[in-house]
Length: 105
Image 1: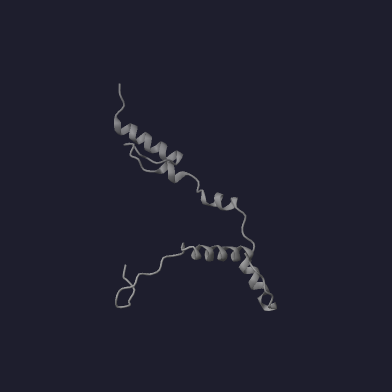
Image 2 (image 1 turned 45 degrees about the horizontal axis):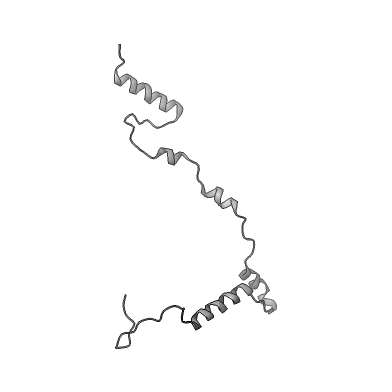
């Protein structure tokens, strides 16, 4: 003796309401498995400590005192860029047309 399909679907629907799951009798892929997962963003963001103060903020704090503060990392970066440009490795120059206007891209 078999049970009618309609009665089984009613039972499945009632079970889904009771346990707060998705009613999907055809088994269609819906992505609920992914949507039910916890978000990873807050966990990743809390892994890294927050920046308290940047070097630029530090410079702004002492600007009214007219103290000269050098950022060694920035000076090294600018020196490296100047060395690259001296070797011809810098950004390429813009192409010019014959009438003096910049080429349209």
